[in-house]
View 1: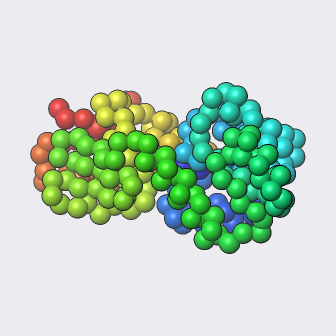
View 2: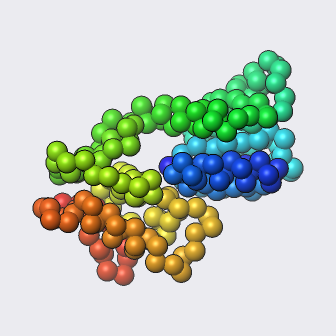
Length: 223
């Protein structure tokens, strides 16, 4: 899962980014409303954590801009204001949840998980290609009856492959969806993780599912 944090307080943004990355999420950060809106309109994020008090465009204006553009990505608002009127204003603007500063990271994490779970619940409960099965809600993968143990990044990569079965994914596409904006395109980390994944789901098994498209990228499909 890839998250966007729009927060102008550097310490708060750094704290949230570090904590979420430790939980296995890819996290992008924007420090002002205009940049946050541009990044959010890319449509590559699974959830947006949005502070209301931002320089330039405030959080509610960013939120209204997203909803006008039909961007349905879940939004968790952060604010130091805790009145009922402010919460109603935020929710009416299209927010999915509301968290008042200061907050405990565990509460933020619980709300993030709940919003992501709602999104998963609207999708097919299981993804399957041949005898490879992925359960996004339980973060579990199986090849036949055997459970495949995956790291958070490997799981995110396999999830992206299986949601795009038969589609050739370039390294740029994979970087945008599984890593973050700070990803260095000159590294071979994507190829390394694809090889990790191959060893876990394809080694000593048939049919092979992950294939290299020379000069382009990778595709997951039954050949």
